[in-house]
Image 1 (cartoon, rainbow, N blue to C red):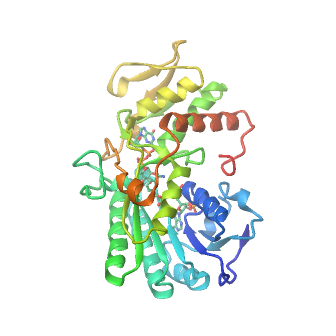
Image 2 (image 1 turned 180 degrees about the vertical axis):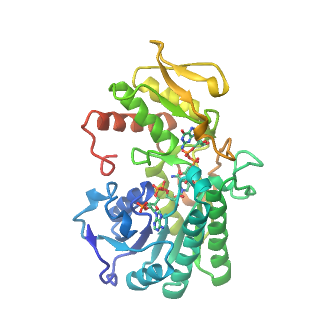
Image 3 (image 1 turned 135 degrees about the horizontal axis):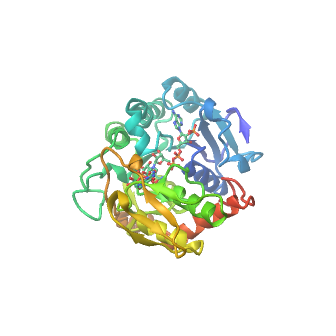
Length: 357
Ligand code: NAP
Ligand code: F7E
């Protein structure tokens, strides 16, 4: 991978991805490179060592890292003016909901205002570009109907979701005010072997793998009853790309249409390592016990949130009908894929976070 910007005035399509070092950024970079794009990935200077998910793109002549920070408008203006992307994917964010309660101001700055700063850079330097904002099912929060569609009212339940609401409406406002092709993908939870270890799915898959290899005894979790519509990140970045290739700009829900609890995720993960669980007790006393009688899952209130999003279920009919998008990986396949990748890592044979994961 090349560090620096260079002229992007070539004839091929040029895309800029913020959050390129993250889960989605890495899958999207791979997709766009496969489609023949020149890809510029915005990365923070402090994060340049944290490139495990994109290290396998090193040496790819059509992939470059450019320095910038969503908290710094000047850096965004500089990058957009130099690179002149035709497509901008704003995936950068402080994306961990629980942390947003501890750092609400930083989360608002990066996750909310960061989007506005990038929109403004696009408006000034590449008004004809197409802009994708990584909106989230967290916007629905305390849901008023199920399943959630593009017309379901928002009720954000965290500083993260409040920041995403700001970014959602900023994107809509630039579309309506300036006629920009600016869209929101309202993506429900999507996971992969590259998922950050702080999110519940990866925490469980990693714990199951470490239990299987004798590296860990059990895992402590928060709300086992929380339900999410979990899909595969590799499928979801394709929906982002399709949104920017549509005839007209619009906002789309991206989801599988299936909802599962954290407890169900544990069931499949521990079954995958040959230690199926049975559940005993209730509330903070609930435990998941394997056939040998060992407690593998317990509840720790430390992982509860000040306000919880209890249950999410998306209806992606619009994306299916208008974009021709549908998920390919099932919930069961997703859990198996994540546990198997973590088993490989636990056995020291894993490929790290990037290619193959
Ligand atoms: P992720 O793995 O947490 O990646 C977040 C990215 O944002 C990282 O590359 C991070 O860079 C970057 N970032 C953080 N602060 C930044 C700043 N100040 N300036 C520039 N970049 C910054 O998230 P993800 O799961 O790939 O999600 C991608 C986007 O989709 C996020 O906006 C997230 O909120 C949103 N989203 C995710 C889901 C989901 O289920 N995954 C669902 C809906 C929406 P560092 O490496 O420097 O930290
Ligand atoms: O929590 C519960 C937790 O942190 C899922 C982000 O990508 O998706 C993600 O946000 C559920 C919650 O993801 C633990 O309380 C139980 O109800 O994996 P999560 P999230 O909060 O849904 C949305 C769509 C985004 O936009 C975000 O950027 O699981 N839960 N026990 C736990 N969660 C965690 N992290 N750790 C636990 O031990």
